[in-house]
Image (cartoon, rainbow, N blue to C red; front, side):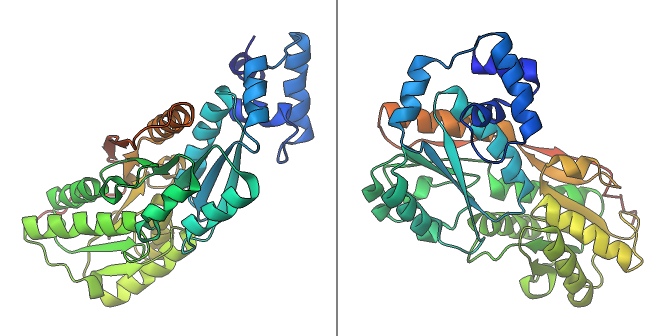
Length: 336
């Protein structure tokens, strides 16, 4: 009997089981009771080696998450914590503001808790300098590539944001759209937004489409509320657009709500597409056309890279995982 067997029989994720067994906060009494019922039924005892690893790890592995409303990160975290727990380590999560300095937070964590490793979900690459090597622990950056930084203890796992954004603009073009608005983060603060904007601009030039950042690009945080506000701005600055590409599914869903509140139909009047592939987008009306990031693959590969570098310190590893375009129901085809 292993912790994975306990998870399977109880119906909870491995990370949830691990937190229950370690009396971690955030676990309801009912969840803890049901898990312990399975544990007691099988006289389960934690693996001695895994327990030893946890004791050695002080506070385990730090997960630093930028923003509190990013549902992509929430899904990735569940997979990450399961992988980490199954390997005998514990994890702890720090949420910081989208515009905060994550490296400063990492320095604070290392001074206070001395983790075995650090994972960054969301990032501004301007904050990552060779000084990160002084932390003395392996780090992994998720959803953003750190290959150009050449920092010896910083690995990364990401999708090709530029190629994915380019593909989405091409998809809209193939459906007859020639005037396209974009909702995204501030490129000077969000490297994924910068890469996706570069993909947008590349596609616009290649396809011969007009694109003015001042008129057709609306800044937003990665949230429903900011997606809503950005869509309202686009309706004023670019009233002739027939489609919108939002750089996150939450932004896209907020934009759809704004369009409906302004008496416009999706996709009959304006088509809307997103980015991430979170489950919520497939339950919205209409189902959201989006770029799906491989959340489980991102989590599993990044966890394995970090855990390997904890046990056998080596050079940084940079991987790119594939993306998938999900057509959904939020895009219509325009006829000439």
